[in-house]
Image (cartoon, rainbow, N blue to C red; front, top):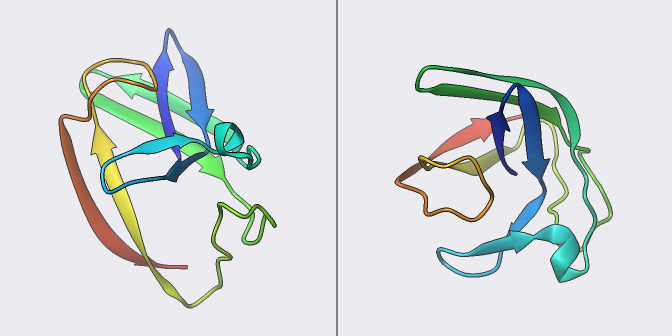
Length: 97
């Protein structure tokens, strides 16, 4: 999922990693947009994005998610509010659903 908040409006897209450091919109790769936007906000240097995704979307670009299983999540951010700018910093962590 990639997104930003601009002028109070939330923009989110379902993306798929198609290389070590690359990703494209899921729909551009033949998949489906499987995000439900819940909300978002931007304060000074902090952006919050709230969304939900199905545990199993049946999209070939999405992994089936299961409760109690640990998944690696990648976080990245950039200075510009768009879907194409370079991500200045990134990290990952493991989460359990």
